[in-house]
Amino acid sequence: MSIVAITKQLATEALNNQVMEVMEGLRPGETPAAEPDSLAAIVMAQVQAMQNVLKDDQELLVLCTVGPTTLRVLELYAPSPKLLVITGAEGERGIARIISPVEAVQLVCRPIAVKPDAKPVRVRIVAGKPTAKAPR
Image (cartoon, rainbow, N blue to C red):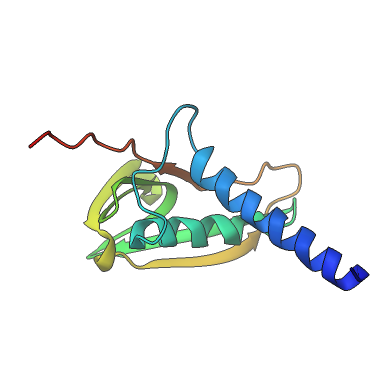
């Protein structure tokens, strides 16, 4: 094998491991409720991927606007493959939640610099526990 092929294989394995860590390591003992190809899982994976490439002096600013309310997203929670619960700060009003079908959610994401000596804020990605199907 050439060096290029080995490097490519290692990069692919590392990326696959990161995706699995994101999907499995969100909360100890929990597994994602969202199927890997569900829209909720895709949205959360995209936000996580954007966070993963940030430098130590950057954070990802994620905003969600619904009507007159704009939240700075602090947490994305997918209790099911079709639903997102978005928790965030609403300016000086405090913490608020938006509960919405994934198809209706629009997020604006942009990396921003962190003030010196400040810890970067990271969006928490949480997948819900899968529900057991009732026997027929």
